[in-house]
Image 1: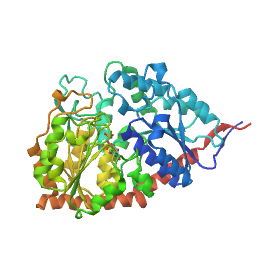
Image 2: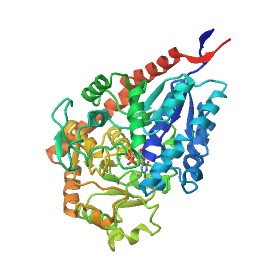
Image 3: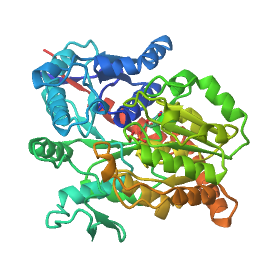
Image 4: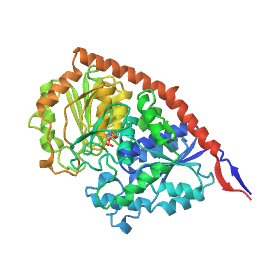
Length: 491
Ligand code: UDP
């Protein structure tokens, strides 16, 4: 006889895509689920696990019920260099393809592993870019929920663009077309919209993503209903399945060391960084960071430095340097460090971003518009200067600037991608940067109103996760999965 047997606690299996912007929110999700009484297995690989070793150790120390499970990625079998387990390790497109192939080869080992667990899995939540996990879920007879780290505004745009093949007859990537089915007038261009691995060689993979998106039992997102109700509701209606908005997920972290080492060990001494911020006046520091993937060419670094210098505002600037062994000061204009010493701090490498943003001295954020950064900025109540680079970031900019009205566009028209050559990149000029910084951090009516709206959103974000929509959604999600039970054969 087939009957349902319920696990004592629902057991969620999380499978992130291995890029920092995808992995970090899923680690937060693991903590959020655990906080609400679920058990979590977090699937990773040795290289990715080593980056978050302090989080793994801390979770163990605090007896948080998250198991981090590292699977050996078959790099050699697909022709990837050993240890090439994260997208930030690859610069060639064909390596991304090989990496997605290698991850899909974890299918069998994952099924075997999950079949052996004393508490059987109840549900898989996996990244959009790990579509093979749909087959794993079906083989185990459990639901698969898809995680996409976009806001609902961009999720809806992406869905309409791909499912309705909006750009099929548009030859010019820069041509703007009206997006049919969007709740209001919105013009999008292919170059400034998220792709779906459209390059040659990815055909099967991108089709699998869309197929599994249709077959998924629901979607989990890192936004909150009160922030963008129009788009959450429209997206849910359009896809015809439940959308669980459970963000801002990172706000569930209360342990300082988990917040400080979120995603990777910081390359700066956090204490030094916090002491520097303590020495600044409240609300005056501009934080500048372009996320985990973007690399800034030297000519652009120069323009940013000179724009910041001319603005005369205090700043904390994070520059990614892991592919640049050079001391960063050698790449910045001569004398810049000395001239801005009293009001500027440059961090080369990984910064404890969530911690920095919540410091009272920080009063603005110049961001590349990755959704994690945006939701962190919103949660900290910060007005933002938007500088989108690629992917869905140009759409996020529209949400922040035009809909929520807490952002000011620096005025980027062209995409910048880490695989582009320096001469292909349109550099944003120092005057543009200076103007945006002075306006955002200033005392004009527009700046004050932006600041006030940002503070209101901060309150709403905190409320959503503590007692509002995200709180009830995570409870409902756990109840829903528990009530479906774990299907095992009981003789
Ligand atoms: N991040 C960080 N320190 C850094 C750079 C990034 O903690 O020096 C975190 C940031 O807080 C965010 C994530 O990395 O959670 C970046 O994700 P986002 O979506 O903003 O951009 P992506 O890196 O995917 O382009």
